[in-house]
Image (cartoon, rainbow, N blue to C red; front, side):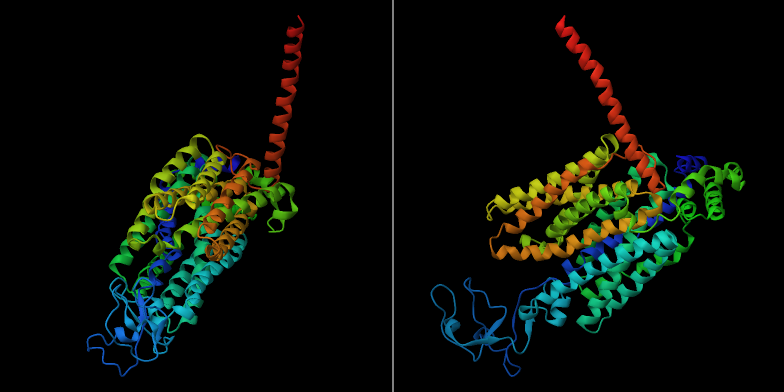
Length: 551
């Protein structure tokens, strides 16, 4: 298409693309930290009831006299005796005080701070009758991500990718920093919700701005780079959380760098493709000339100084695309409606299964830092394989295979005995790697399927469905009360079923980005025309074969 030729003319994947892609992708290192931050800031340490204030804890056995024991001989987390119970232990090791009258923890709790010196659970006592509030904080963060995907996806198509990114960096820096100084739990949740909104905008605009400034042959590399940076962010979180275990300092450490991202984001160059789709040909020309100058293509940039040359190459797209940037076009237009419904299934299934696995790190029974590292490490080979498949076989096979394999791993995990911890952990890690590859592919695939005039809105709606999946996912884990493996069966069945939707999507390998809804329609019609021609060619071949048989 004409615009891809213009990108190649002003330097292709030159110095400008390398610098801007690096600067736009860098904040994703910390975005990964924010997404799973509560695995550490909201970790639940071992705890038990605090005895009355006048209890002499320095006296041997005084604390144990207030604590009933569970079936395994450990202190109960949410109950204490109404009065101290003393006596010799039973032969099995449990205490004789196990039959006394108990009551809830009216004087608070004592926490084991050997691993986590401070978490929001410890600070605001989010245990026992208040334990649901811990999940509420993460759910509100995901609600913020959902709202941000809808709001900032639409604003980016109206105001531009650069302006929204600048706003998102500032909002993340301010809200994340304020969360670190939150005086109480409701204020903390409010700032986490605002952080989720802005981080959703960063995720969407990062992909879109990079894809729209890179030529066709480098888009898969850019998409894979973004995925790898996110994976490195998971390693970074494990290291930072281990070095800074106090939740306020950790929250502050992953938020303050966004002030630096906000400052240098003013130097980003707005997408020339967005300028052209918005009818701003003068700004399109200036952006292309600036990129040509940075890439050392001054003569090529000067040749674009005549506005009528640029207008001639883009007038068709502007005429057809005018007035078609409304989100309702995703449902009104048949071609876009098909893309929207299929991609919505893929986004939901990927996020639903992904967060079902990664937000329960303490459930593995080993070091939470080790599991974080393993979950980050599996992304590296998974995304490399995904990249090779994306570039060699196409986006559609990569998307289908990653979802299908992830679902199969999770389903198998559901029938493996509970005592086979190594096998279960290995299958979970393999499934998580496939889902990470699926995320890597779906971002690129969605950006290539939607036209420029509605690309950001389409990505926003896809991310919205992904957030719905991440909100629903914790609710499914409650079905473990029915049978322990029920959540795994649900987490596995959804991606397996959704993988079938990829068969209804067109392949985008080596294809130019569509700029207008009409381009999507033409691509669909061209595919149908090609299929009819193939069927017509088969008819004479069959007739000739029958004639030979008759002879």
